[in-house]
Image (tube, rainbow, N blue to C red; front, side):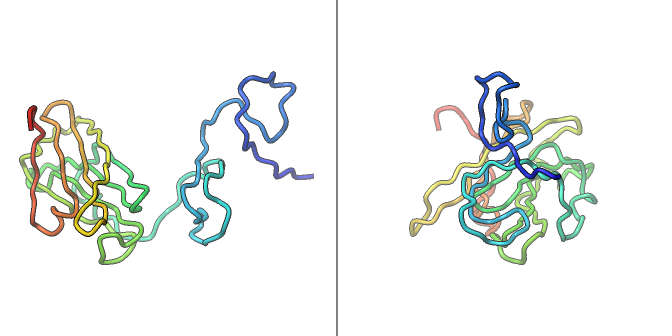
Amino acid sequence: MIEKLLPRILNSSSDNRLKKKTEMNDAFNVVVTEDFEDFDGSTSTGNEGVLKPVKGNKAQPGDDSLNDIGRVLGSVSDARTGVVYFFVFSQTAAEQGVYAYDTTNYFGGGSYRYRRIYATSEFNFQQDSVVQGDIVHVSGEGGEFRPILYFTDNVNEPRKLDVLRCISGEFLIDPMTKGQ
């Protein structure tokens, strides 16, 4: 008989011998769903906030153009827009920069595509750097939100990138400085 009961309740206070099959000690290798969409892309109701085991990696359609550019130094996932931002080192300094993998056609041009957000030799990434970043959403004109990307490699100054302005060409990159 195959049991399909999965742990879905966190209970770290009870003894392991007394726990039910639906209880777990810790929450490793689990994901909390943020929307009503299942992992396979189908829409259903009642999945928001549900604790599920991680299913592992799944190949996505699209091109492998990011592999030809260089080495990924770090990434930031934006759950609100469905975009993953990558910080890329390249031997060609002008190709160093921020790239994105758009899973929801947020930028236009199709789903599951790579897109260059901003690339310049001014990033001055090192081959062995580790870039850490975060996404903040701010209100824009008309009440819509704008994703702002903050990142640093602990060598260069911290940076702030307005993603939508970089794509439109209105705004480049500003290092964050004290007092501004």
